[in-house]
Amino acid sequence: MRRSKGFTLVELIIVIVVLGVLSATAAPQFINFSNDAETSRLHGLEASLKSALDMTYGKAAIQGIEKQSATCLGGKFDDVNISCPDGGILLFYGYPAPKESALSQVIQLDDWAVSEVGIGNVIGLAADEDSLMSCYVNYIGATSTSEPEVKVYADNC
Image (tube, rainbow, N blue to C red; front, side, top):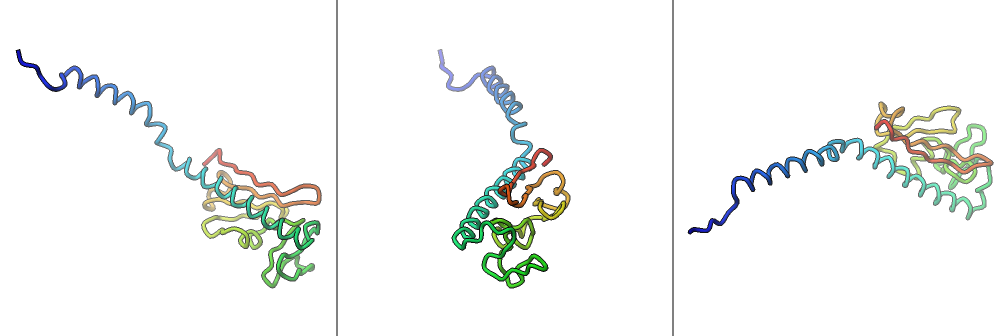
């Protein structure tokens, strides 16, 4: 009698069926890459922004200006226009003001769409203009009674 060295047809069919079942159950996990990537990108922006806020507050505390309602870090303050005309960072209570001009000095915003909303104390950051209402990061500026807030809204990415 001869011994065969290989797989039988039944064994090959079983392996193919098992691989098919595994791929059918695993495929949905890998289909939605773009939403997961955008959510991760927003969380990365959130972490960068929080880190920049802490560093800016530390610099303001060293200079003793962290309790002022509005001032400039590294420049002269224009109290009429509430701005830093000579390139300083506009601060509210030691943290960057929720304005594109202030935030762009502490983090890179080149790849982000920016929208100042509300009364001027909130700014939204999103991947593009269309995502500003559905998939974005909100930065709410500091007040005399609260630190700034950074929130990710990624449910509709």
